[in-house]
Image (cartoon, rainbow, N blue to C red; front, top):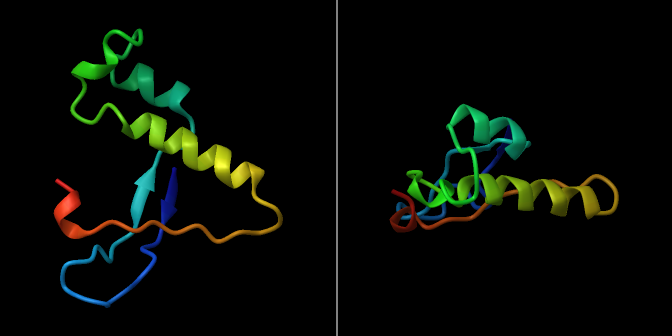
Length: 79
């Protein structure tokens, strides 16, 4: 698991301020969610979550040095 802090804290009531957790390895997540193939992926409640975690890990692996990662999301975008 990787927990990213919010980019902007206490800037307004409509911003998310809590940390967001990502699973670092989608090959662990897919069997736990009974995703056996790419055809069963769209039927999941949040099909983009495993891809999002994979993208974050790849970007951080390519980043030079020690980079502090954050996330930004307006509260209305999250369900």
